Length: 544
Image (tube, rainbow, N blue to C red):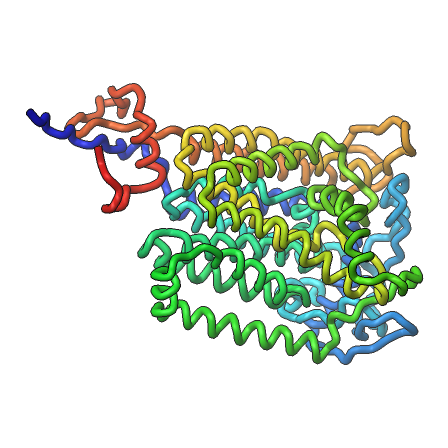
């Protein structure tokens, strides 16, 4: 005798996490933006590598000098811009962590235009045109802060958009990988005038968009938001820095690994695919054309006399010696590479990324494992090979942040792979653990770096003051302002991730909630939780 199949459980409407515009976009944008804004306010002028040079290019581009001719002063390449004297300041604290920023003058004062050579003057103008106009209106610290906030908004928007699209996936817990991908160096750069942070966020956006288009079941990747995200992320990645086309090619190749022949055929039949490919091809050609025209890839020779190194010898040095520094810099060696964060902060990210990657490699299918491992390995190898090829001319000049446009996608891909394996409930708990580790670590990184800028770090074995409100130098808006912004940002990010990782209450069919909206069925089954998060099972999947 066959017993009738029980009616499937259904989620109670009041218990299902809201996925409207507010939760999917505005809250993550607010969390990321306020965090980046805290860094923008807390950092002195030229407090990140070459910020003054980027500011001078932003002023020049925004004032109409969009394509200055390449020039050199001796061996130093760049381009000339006319900028106000108020934006030209000597930096007395860079590379001297024991020196606070009080020794330097804040921008402002004499606005007489002078001609300066800036190494950033050959960069593609798109980013600089977007953030540079406040500097033209107000070439002082007020204009710098507004320009920084515009840059922070661009980075936050890309991360928030990627989060929004990640929440539309079957395995939407992949969104937890985005928070893991945002390290303190990314936040530090996002609060500065520097296209590197936008480039990193674009890498994350492109990875999420391609996951939705290529790895989701047929039809799931047809949402316009996924295609737009992949297109915008790819276009930004191709444009903002000269290495962008190489990073774009690596991400696209890795995400295409392991697709079935029917999937490739469906992709080639897609009108959106050809529109997207054509737009990105045109963007890539324009970007490469700009790089060749303006010789953007020509950088300042280091002059360390390494001209005898071959490719193999240079790669040995890269892998055996420099990778250790790069891995630290992926998380937090801030300022002008003069402020390494306490190791406990780095360990929070090493643990989070390592856990996701190990679980993905253990639980994922063959193609999924190759994608995660491939992006991680190529993310380290490709920039190293580029540096090794050019080492005899430019020496070893790489920094960990240059690897992040590729490596930012690794925890995102890993989180998607773990969710795809069916470990939904453990992944929920892991994301909550990551939030409890990483959000305080972000606040600690900000506070530590504020102490460095405001008071200077003492020599080795000295005693560090943790009074973030004191010091010889103070931010223009006071030291309490970035702390408050960071605390609010942390509260938003914790609440947001906690809400979206809450186990969803499930009502058996035909059961009505009580007047208070409580669910009489105490606990859903694991299968029900998987269905709620991952979406309905496909028709080919057997039911029980």
